[in-house]
Amino acid sequence: MARRPRVPSPVPPRDGVSPTRVRLPQGGGYGTVADFLTDRFPPHDAGFTRDLFDRGDVFDADGTPLDFDAAFAPGGHVWVFRPLPDEPELPGDLPILYEDDHVLAVDKPHSLPVTPRGSFVRQTAVTKLRNSTGNEELSPAHRLDRLTAGVLLFAKTREARGPLQGLFELQRVSKTYELIAPLEPMAPERPEADDVAPPRHLPKYPEEPHMVRSRIVKDSSSLQAREVEGPPNAVTGVVLLEELGDSGWGLYGANPLSGKTHQIRVHMNSIGRPICGDPLYPQIRNDELERPIGRLQLLAREILLKHPFTQEYLRIRSDRNLGISTFADSTGIGAADREEP
Image 1 (cartoon, rainbow, N blue to C red):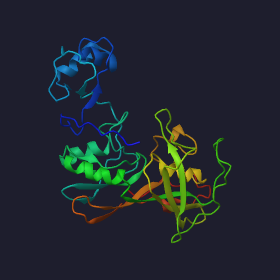
Image 2: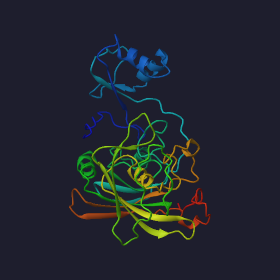
Image 3: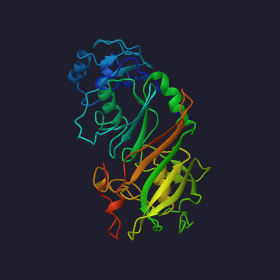
Image 4: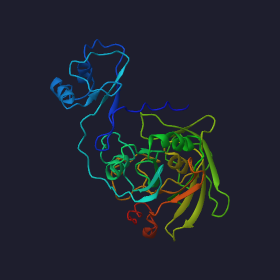
């Protein structure tokens, strides 16, 4: 199912952060917008809500600041700059890999979210780049998991957003990832795991990749995506690039031909080779979710696309590296906890 187009904000970002679009429900018996916002958002205090209006942080659908006594309009929406949470400092280095009038490509570090979500607003790639470049129109062209490092593309103007994002949505971008995972398949830790045994050996480059096909779904009730019965909606090609000494681990290349959430992580787990440092697959390990050491060994190495404006092909490569040189521990787990910046 295609995602509904995002409604553009009529209000420009502040300090790199865009306002939140808040829908006004059909019912509820609210007399004013302030009544609804007090009921909707913590700390559910009228004084807190009044401060939002006094600071000019609440706007109507057209971007006009609202007064505290503005009438509630069922079925409409408002724009709100919500107070920003306290955030831990995250890795913020975003070296520029490529830039022209339409496109900006950066080398994202591990652990940095791309867009504001949950407890991270300022500490995100888009906010940091909007502030460092002074370009409030910067918008990510695609998704990249917070725990994944590597090539990340942004549209520099509103006019570039649709054409650039469309290339990813139509799967007209070639993406190459590198990852570290076991050489031999691990026993499944999922009781619902398929009876089909994972492949004992995977092809080694330059052989043709092993193709993993399945149906992946992800809902907000779980941190994990999962494979279900049904027609495949996710395809990933996997090939072994290098055996990492006698550690029992290997460096793999992965080419996702679709863009489902956690696709490579789910597919590597499904063939018995969960990615080193993955806190979600095969099982959720809460103590590793925020740990910078032993980080997920997954890197978006390269993107190849046809520029939507110049029609020239762009090949953009990450300069980052995974923790290959640290695999001296025969047990493997936890060995890749140091890497080049």
